[in-house]
Image 1 (cartoon, rainbow, N blue to C red):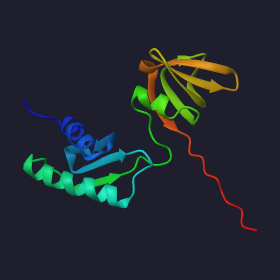
Image 2 (image 1 turned 180 degrees about the horizontal axis):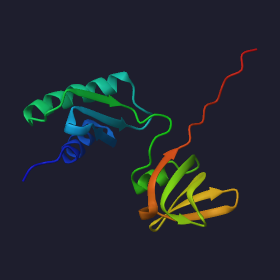
Image 3 (image 1 turned 135 degrees about the vertical axis):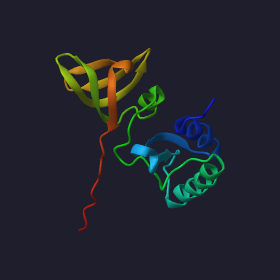
Length: 150
């Protein structure tokens, strides 16, 4: 049985002390992009450490690629796992749905955690229950606080 790149990454990144948020590869796998996170966020040294480890691993596992990029998921971090909706409770997010809910495929509001198989989103119109299996993609809404210099 052959191991997929996703399985290899899922098995390798967490023991290094990082969460594998997401990964993608270009057609024909020429470029591999890996997004990692950890409590408190990741810095350049974290990305370099994971990149060096994966470079050696890909050589041993005969992963054919030309370029590897390792980075943080950014301020607009994607929400992939059910635990993300609990972890980022109280932060604003945008959810794009597979099927319409209340006549829309887009929900934006403050995350209210998880209840069973539903994500709870606090919107101006009230709490919306969104079945996790109806979420096509979801991202945090970046909040940037500009400091005023006087």
